[in-house]
Length: 300
Image 1 (cartoon, helix red, strand yellow):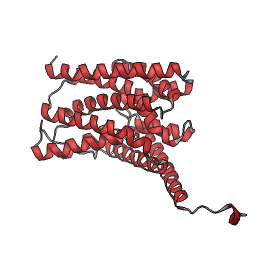
Image 2 (image 1 turned 120 degrees about the vertical axis):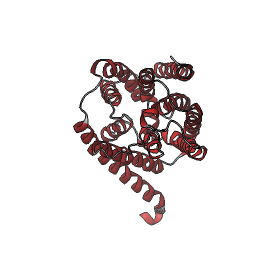
Image 3 (image 1 turned 90 degrees about the horizontal axis):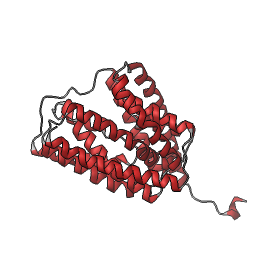
Image 4 (image 1 turned 90 degrees about the vertical axis):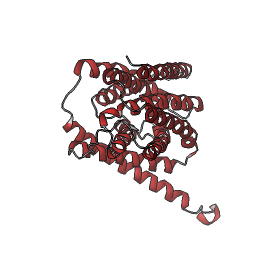
């Protein structure tokens, strides 16, 4: 095991252990017992996330369709609920793939994502509901686009570079900072990061350590912040966490791979529709804010 891989894994594992302890403690104190539905949701999305489908967008779509929690709470709830399983998944694949990317680029992007994630915690709780809905709709449309491009084999092919020029490296770090902020709005960092580095000419296979390490640290740190603030649905978050962890191991070590193209098209349709519903809710909320209040005397 390389020293760089060890240097990545140690803080990720420590941060995740602290986060998981904080979540379970808050859930026990609040008696936030998960339901069979939330356990099943965590199991399904984390299983297929490990096989390459993704988990943020399908989870958001399900919570929106089932109206299990207010729209404002959906992004932080799924971030908290999916973090532990996502980090375990990342550790498994980091051990399998190793780290072969430029350490300066790796550290810079990870820190950028982490700082953006921490800033986003405060931003999302202060953001108006319709703006949260608008950002979530954008994230769902982006996810649907990535599903379609992947199935049509139109994703950027990338190059062979293991690092980037200084100017491009700075852009990548700033972009990861922005991805970290969006993390708190339920927009996953994997798809946009992979597309960005591929367009910059990097070997897509080398990008995984950047995405995984950044998501692990940013997800754990931001999730602890959301738990302390309390603006999440603990029942849902706990259920997704407990339901998802075992299925990551099943997908990674037992199933390993399966044909998911048809499933990806199905998720594309569901996520696209959920994005449209969320966008409609955002536009209605914004319109409602702009409408003048009618005095009771005149209303009568």
